[in-house]
Image (cartoon, rainbow, N blue to C red; front, side, top):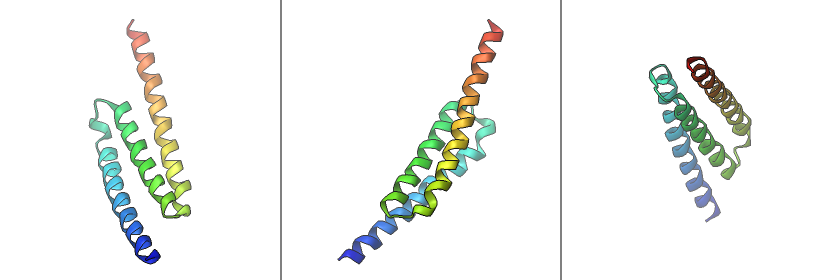
Length: 93
């Protein structure tokens, strides 16, 4: 029974990684055309967290630092975008 649960959890993990990875790839490919970069970055970060959470559930610890770095990169870009937007608005006013 334990092996069945583990296999089932691994199947769910694989499905989650594929789904969230596809979403991240599509969003990254569309960054240049995005009119709401802050929301795009937030969605990428949330998808990354979904992968990280799934990895923790099935004890795929090796993936967690990689995903955390991905989150850090897009969090940085999100912060930079917010700063640039603020500077742009301040310059216009």
